[in-house]
Length: 97
Image (cartoon, rainbow, N blue to C red; front, side, top):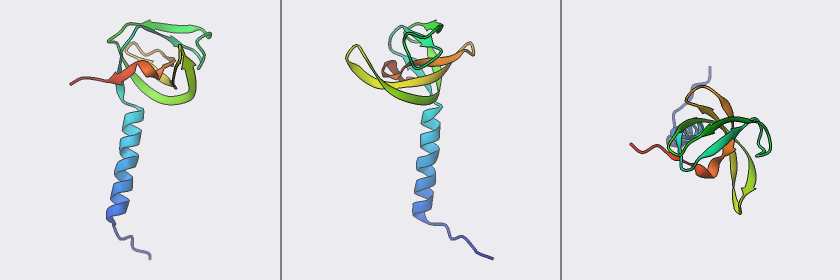
């Protein structure tokens, strides 16, 4: 029977992984009025139109895109009323406490 010995590095890696997962599904606040789309494409169907200050839960990050000269990833989000879709992540920030 192999016995695992805890190591500080293992704890550090586990903490990093937990933080990464938590930040991926964190609730964020919009810094601008934005549409939420069905796909990672501003030409796809609009699922919801959100206002600056609305909160969304980030479910995943997708491809990089260029929007009006700004490069950022698309973020798959869930709105406060349960709709899911994609928006441009440049306009997301951590909720202020």
